[in-house]
Structures are given as C-alpha cells and as structure tokens.
Amino acid sequence: MPYFDHAATTPLDPRVRDAWLELADEPLNPSSIHRQGQRARALLEEARERIAAAIGLADPAQILFASGATEAANMALRGMAGLLPPDERLRVLSSPIEHSCVRDTVAALDDAGRIGAVALPVGESGRVRLDEAPRDRRALLCLMHANNETGVVQDVEAALEWKSAAGSAWLCDAVQSPGRVAFDADALGADFIVLSAHKLHGPPGIGCLAGPGVERLPPLITGGQQEGGRRPGTESVALAWAFARAVELAVERRAEAARHLAQLEEKFLRLLGAKGIAWRVNGDAPRLPGFLNLSFEGYSAVDLAIALDMADCCVSPGAACSTGVVAVSPVLEAMFPLDANRARGGLRLSFGFETDSSEVGILADALGRLIRGKATTARSEARKEPS
Ligand code: PLP
Image 1 (cartoon, rainbow, N blue to C red):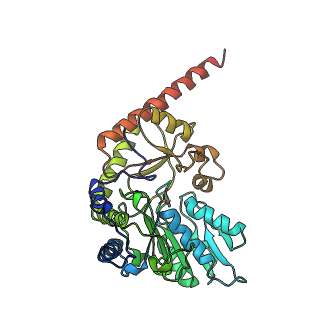
Image 2: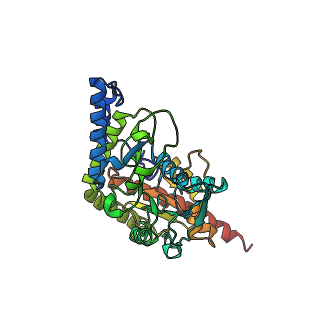
Image 3: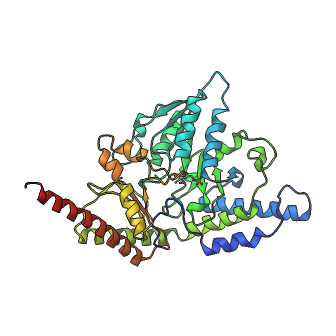
C-alpha cells in the first residue's frame, strides 16, 4: 500500500534491521561486571560514539539514550524546571507549532506553577517569530528544527543569536531533519537536541537527548545509575546499535535522498496541476524536501485522508494523534488564525527515500478522482438551485 506518511514514522531499513538482529539474541546488560557485561558496555559506547559522529557532536558523553523523542523532550523540560531554586521560576518560550511532546509538557509544567510559559507568535509562513522573544537569562527557548506538519525549517540561526545574547538555553526538537537536510549538532549550538530512530528508518522505542545541556540534568525517575545516573533503567544495546546504523545511513544518503524527494514533490504537483486541481501550500520555503502540507478549497483534510485510505494511499490530516483522535491542527491554526477552512484543510504528504515515482502518480490520480468527483456533484447541485 503506497505510504506517504513518513513524518509519522518510517519503514525499517533492512540494513538497520540486520544491525538490530545482530545483537537482539545476546544477553547484554552494560552494568554487569563480567565479560559479557563489558562487551555490552563497549557496544553501547560505540553506538553513542557513532551517533555523535554522524550528527556532528564532538563529545559522545553529551548523548543520553531515551525511549524516543517524547521522553527526551520531557527529560530536558522537566529537568530544567527542577534545576532552579523554588523561589525562581524558569521562563519557557515556545510556540503552538512545537510537537505535543514539547507543547503539552510546557502546558503541564505551567499549570503546575513550575515554570512560566511564554507563547511566541507564528507567521503565516510557518516560522516562529523570534524577534518578539524576550531576552532573559533564566529562560529556555523551545524551537524545533523543522516542523512535523508543514516541514518548514525554522530560523535556527536566529535562535542561536537569541541564546547567545540572552545567555540562556535552547531546546531543539530535530526529529524530522537528519536525512532530509544537512544537520550539524555542534554548529547548531542548541543546549538540547531531540532525536528519534523511528523517523529515520530505525525501530521505534529508542531516541536520544543530545547536547551540552544534558550534563547538568537531574534524573526524572529513580532506580539505577544508568546513563550517568540521569536516565535509570537497563539500556537496550541492540536498539542503540540499530539507532546508530539508522542515523549513519540517513546522513550518508542525505544528498541523494533530498534530490529524489524534491523530484517526487515536483512530479506530484505537476500531475495535480495537469488535472486542473488547485491547491495552496501551507508553509513557505525553506521546507524539508518531500514534505507537503496542502489545502484544497472546500475540502476537509480528514475527509480526504479517509477517502485516500480507501483508495489505498496512506496520508495524514495534520498531525497523527496517538489516540487516533484528529483535532484541527494547532500548527495550522496558529499560522492561519482567521482562516479556519485552510487550517481544517491541511493534508500532510510526506514522502520517503524509498517512495517510488510511480507511487506519487497513484496518489495524484486518487486525489484527482476525489476532488473532481466532489466538484462534479457540487456543480450538478448548483445547477438545480435556480429551479
Ligand atoms: N517531535 C516531532 C517533531 C515529531 O514529529 C514526533 C513524532 O511524531 C515526536 C517529537 C515524538 O517522537 P517519539 O514518537 O519518538 O516520541
């Protein structure tokens, strides 16, 4: 079944599966003192070093493994909230375009009185407006690298400038970027970087929090000394090994993948145009290649996504919710506060490096049939009206 939802998750690369299975059968506990435990420790540290090298992080000790991006973001946000003395509150600057792992955690901490949340405005372009970010030494800025609904790459240079001028910290959810755009963790300059393997053709259940900020984080849970005492619980060496392979492959094939993804995008829009279908792209360049959020006048994204599913095409209306409940996208609502139709219409199409050129033809044909089908009905109803 043609799959156009790589922003939600990606198929496992067979080379990553091989890496995973290479270690899956072995008893590997890096905390054990025997030789098998030492082997586990060495493999885990090698995985950490390979991930650091692939993302451009000089110090592998600045990587903490976690179950995924949601846990990694929680580690950073909740950890930072707990660092200040009780009479001082961390100010957290963020916007509605952040993924719910940041958005909901900021809201929960704010409701509990543990931080002071400051909302940053978002332009119609899909970029967060950092010119309005207050400079405050006790602030943490949450600015993602590229948005998971529109693919819009954020102004990370401005975030680094803000951070340096304010003397404060920056959390960057970079889940969608490696493998699609050039990514260098040290050059980025964020204190915390969030990554997840399943967005990079790796397995779900492993991700990391990376960057110099991890060194001062307290643990969120108690029970062991793993990950320098900052993330207790036995590490999964096989998953870390698979994660390392996934990141390496994503970085190695990035330029080729980006070319392929841009060609798919161009072909898809050309085919839609040839069918006389009009659309609006939600979010301005720079965007991740192979990543489109489109609104079609008069169509709800949920209806289109359901109809496309029946036509054997997997796409998402806005963000895929973990519960299966689909609400109007807070990202598109923030971008188009006065245009509810556009926000409701945002259909997310995200191609992958393994997406075939013929598959985008299938998608364009299916969309063409749906849109022309409804347009015909609407016209025949309109013709009846005068009588
Ligand atoms: N951040 C972004 C930008 C995402 O797209 C996602 C997944 O949808 C996450 C965080 C959460 O990732 P995980 O499933 O690893 O918790």
